[in-house]
Amino acid sequence: MHRHLISAADLTRDDAVLILDTAEEMARVAARPIKKLPTLRGRTIVNLFFEDSTRTRISFEAAEKRLSADVINFTAKGSSVSKGESLKDTAQTLEAMGVDAVVIRHGASGAPYRLANSGWIDAAVINAGDGTHQHPTQALLDAFTLRRRLTGRDTGLGQDLSGKRVTVVGDVLHSRVARSNVDLLHTLGAEVTLVAPPTLLPIGVESWPCAVSYDLDSTLPKSDAVMMLRVQRERMNAAFFPTEREYARRYGLDGDRMARLPGHAIVMHPGPMVRGMEITAEVADSDRCTAVEQVANGVSIRMAVLYLLLGGNEPAVTHARPSVSHHQPADERSAHTPFTAEEK
Amino acid sequence: MDTHANPSAADARPVLEGPDIARVLTRIAHEIVERAKGADDVVLLGIPTRGVFLAQRLAAKLEQITDRTVPVGSLDITMYRDDLRMHPPRALARTEIPGDGIDGRLVVLVDDVLFSGRTIRAALDALNDIGRPRAVQLAVLVDRGHRELPIRADYVGKNLPTSLRETVKVQLTEEDGRDTVLLGAKPAGQ
Image (tube, rainbow over all chains, first blue to last red; front, side):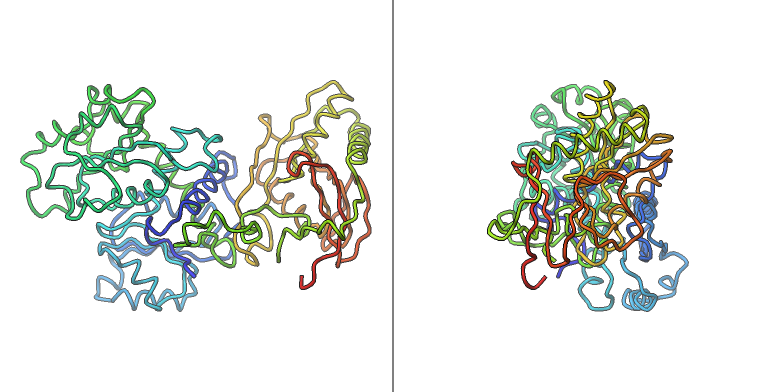
């Protein structure tokens, strides 16, 4: 039984659509005066952050609190980890405290997988970003934002992103956001094109389920959405491009470039934005840029994931199901139906 | 537990047919108008799935009687269930509160079957988070008994004494293609 969310590639199309639909209902809670549901009352969730991330941590924390879970924040700085404690010891400490779920951010790719599969801990593990590997809830919130903007809030329910063309621009090499998005958008039926300088593309990118281009200008007119990535200076240990100015001229999004996009197309950014280099202020502040919306959607998506993984006695999201899952007989899908007369 | 305890055609017996359901809803609409002395501040909230369709039908009848538009919404109670941890989590249904909200209004909750009362308890909790109605009333198409909580309906379409070995299945045109209430035997092993 899979009860973790480690990689966007683990999700089937049905799982992903179920998460997006659930998030749509969670978004309605955010519009209420009392933004709280009793669903995870009595459950304990630890936010285990070995790497700094205010944005993702407070997004998870808001989602956990809106579902009434008890939240423990654990940052590596100043903890036993800085005294040399291993991941295993930390996990066993959390297990002894009776934790139901661990949201983990780690600088090493694969740390959440290790935590989930080593038998150190019984809790559900949710990957909140590991190294340059995966950031599945970011991909889900991006897909949610895309579906809301391109298909519509209510008309989008039950729909995937078939036929939508998404261009991902920038530092693909260091970006777990790009990896997660390529996996998830492909699962949801969208066509993804990666645009980056050759030095910022990973080895083996040819085998990814997407197209690759070095030329942003020719890709823009065919895009329904452009997703700008952050240039991750902190992960760069060599010179990947000559100067910031040259990068900005070739791969930065400014007003002229935005004008080449079709009228309905949107500009996305996972944040934090480096204005002037990846994106100009003109674009960042335009109403086509969904960066702020993505933050709000992040809370709804994380509420949906937490509810589907922890809300019942077993998760509703069953990873790596056979791809024929939507042909299964109706009685096996009863977990996805509303309460019936027999339970009133 | 298979929640679709769909009584097979052979052993299910219809206890209400289409015209009966229409009559019953007309009576409930008149009872609401009588008890609320008009329907000035009434808001109907249906509990998904079939309660929503019943609420919409009741609203249409209330409009015929009072010449006034009655706001209708839906209230999904999944997140407020007390037995969430006994089943896998379910897909959420739509919660839609009419634009003017429910503060100070007379909220009539509408559902198809009243059984243990746990759905209605959850609905009362959900209402708490959404606003403060002047009063809350409950209208159900069928009351089959076996309450586990001190809850009773204000408007009942049909009182249907049942045994726990029986199932009650409400079918409505909007969802199932026909209007009927079926009483059947629960399949063995449940």
